[in-house]
Image 1 (cartoon, rainbow, N blue to C red):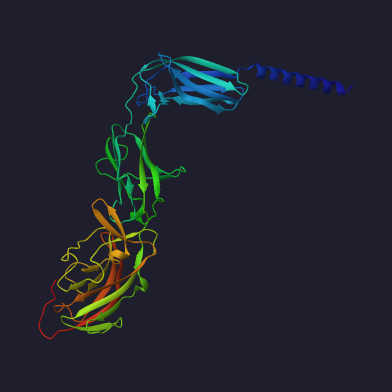
Image 2: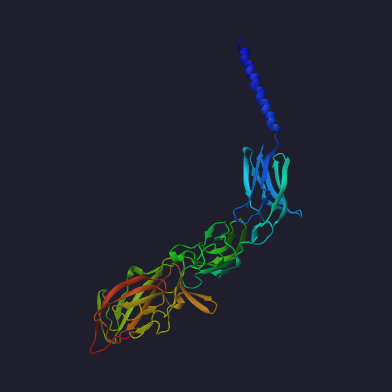
Amino acid sequence: MKSAPLFLALIIVLTLVAINMMGCSARPLLYDVEFYPTVISPNADGHDDAANILYRLSRNASVSIYLVDQAGERHYHRDGERRSAQQESYWTLFSGVVDVDEAGPVKRRMLPDGHYTWVIEATDDSGHTERAEGSLTIVDADTTLPELRGFSVSPQVFSPNRDGVDDHVTINYFLPKPATVRVYLVNEAGEKFFIPEKVSQRIKPGEVGLHQYDYEGGVDLGSVPPPDGTYTVTAIAEDILGQRVVEQSTLTIQHGGVPRADIINAEVEYSTSEGLRGDFVSLTIPLSGTLYFTATVENYGDTPVRTTGPQPGTTYTSRQNFSTLEWYQSDGAWRFGIDFEENPGQTYPFRWSLGQHDELEAVVRGNDVFYYLMPGQRVTISGAIQILDKPPRNPFYLWAGLIHEGVEIVQNRISPILITVDVPSRGAWNQ
């Protein structure tokens, strides 16, 4: 007798479950659909810029949301996106911007003013489809695209290695309306390398006007550039409404890297025309005598190092310098140099290339020939200076250095030696 109430309770519970299941199975796939307001003015003025879209699903389904214009063309906001069943409503905003399928730079654009039919379609795993629809009017829409006018990449082949030749790439475009712009390189594997915009006091990033990017692969900051290869330069502009424009070009990186070279063991061997050899401390040389040196330089990096003349073996007089020999400074080039105490003129006035031309790699670019010390290569550099005049200070220190012209003195005051000039009569150190 005591089991009767329990049996009755079980019957009630099972009945309630059955009723609930019948209710669930009777519920439509797509329900509680809302699309409001029915008139929007998507122009970022803060008033009715977007429509709210809400819906619920009783089963897992693929959902599409699109608008149909008066010509019958569909414009998708969502296209067959997978959604799972849930008690809460799905919610999204429609700002009048739709995806663009056709080829070209415009990827998302604002629909023009007009009357449209909105449609929400849901298709479950069995292929059953349900839909809801209504009307939407768009007025005062901002249809101006965030175009990247005049988009250009120059040069399209560059070598970010601080050699002074095609080290930088300039990217330009004109932005007709405020937008967020991202510019990056992407390789075949999809890896992205973002490029910062050049800072301008006149035009800030995202403002209307001409924008410029000065890209050097990060080498000027001591970073290793992206690996050699061909990349796609991608620029994406998106305005506050969500309109999107994409421009692309190609860029090839070759011989990229951070240049590295040094004077082996930081040693330079000195001698004189009289056969005297420096003991790395001091050396005496007669006036009009010639000081000789020998050193070894190695490219210990993974990128070629550009160099320029005069070639090793060249003899200077104390009245000359590399400019008087018409081997003017060449930004990005590396040279071995000799400097001295109380030098009244150019820093490291006596300079030589890192190797003879027949030892180096010659690269022809247009009408110019450039010479490179290749990675892992060592060269012996020798030269001479004939001292014709009494120096400003006697004795004086003289030393060697490795110069990356227009960038830095890579090695300074290497192998300093005290030079005494044996002066039989009055004279002056001229340059």
